[in-house]
Image 1: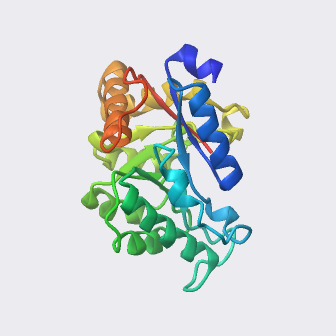
Image 2: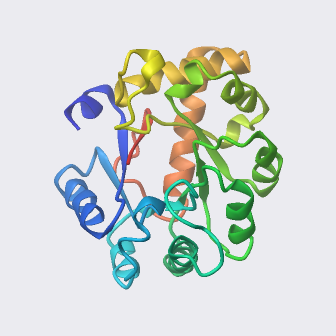
Image 3: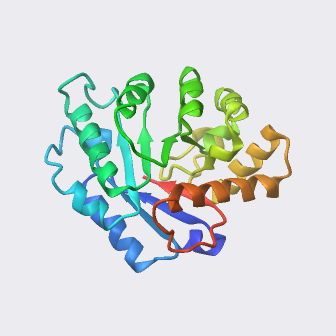
Length: 239
């Protein structure tokens, strides 16, 4: 948090279950200009935490819902599964709370898009979208897409970034993920490098890419509720 504050970066801190959601809400109260709390049950925790009655009340104390979604690498996502039930329940809660939503869709992009079509939520961010074939539908629906440090070396992500609408593109760190091709580094310090790579891909000056993605972050986070610190110069996501 000290590094983020000194760099002018706002931390979008995501809970993965009830305990960590409580933690990010508490961190935001202690550091209101630096931490923006998102709460929810991550797909990896769906089999461990099937009682979600805490989610609606927690949303009232947060800025958004996330990181929620589907991922078959953790557990089944078929009809009746804990993951799918949790995803639907949380989206319904987000409808009532009118908060931004951050979605995890790795390996289940088509199913995630099908589920999202049944709910009226937004603004909505497809965090670290990996499926190129899902990109047209994501763009058509007006969802935000975020790119992290993997953009610095992934040719596929670079192709996708070129295709994305710059007005709906965000920059993230996905901390505490460590990036082997980058020497194992991680954290908010990588956010400017991602913005610079976007500038190269879009053919615009680096400061323009930073300004644009920062403005996009404000739109995403501030459309339904005010961000604590409007002087936002970057966005990093900490899961």
